[in-house]
Length: 240
Image 1 (cartoon, helix red, strand yellow):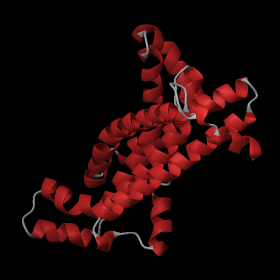
Image 2 (cartoon, helix red, strand yellow; image 1 turned 45 degrees about the horizontal axis):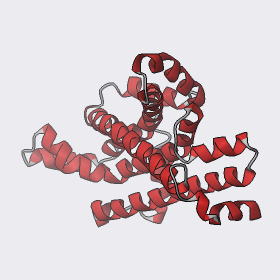
Image 3 (cartoon, one colour; image 1 turned 135 degrees about the vertical axis):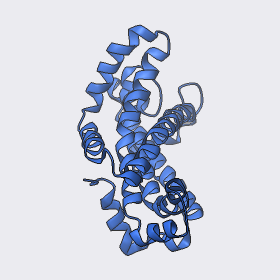
Image 4 (cartoon, one colour; image 1 turned 90 degrees about the vertical axis):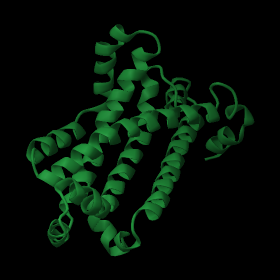
């Protein structure tokens, strides 16, 4: 513990192009781009599956299969295949982002379609009875009711991306994972443990931010209670 503390409180470790602030910015950059791309793919696809029920079996099984892919192996394969075709900084950055997006899509997708599927059928029937068209039912009834599970998927994906984003350092990129790789190389265990601690703190802070946004966006009547939260959390990782 003393080694971790000494490393964290040393001002020289916080400043400069390879300091903690710079690595933190890189890590947040990777995570933000990854979550944005995964949300743009996973949320519309999940809403469509939940609304229509079409392609559920194929997409869900494919998403579950994506979770079993070994991340580090997939990252090296992506770099070997795409790196020579891209060149420059993109040779490593693009494959890393692609792999992280692949890992982030399943929880977001599962949260979106499970949220729509969990909507009370009586609410849909009432909306149709009022003359709403299918897209209006989706936008005005199903999506608002599905927001708690959509946020659950986003929060799960964010935690996974922040933790897995440390692997970007293994292909010569930056981020907080740089402290783990460099610490291992130099047997600086204080640096390794300090870097891991920073990743954990960052994950908790991002999750708290998502929770605050969720409490602001989601209707109070749909906010997960303590008794509901465990059930909803189980729905996201086990969509099948």
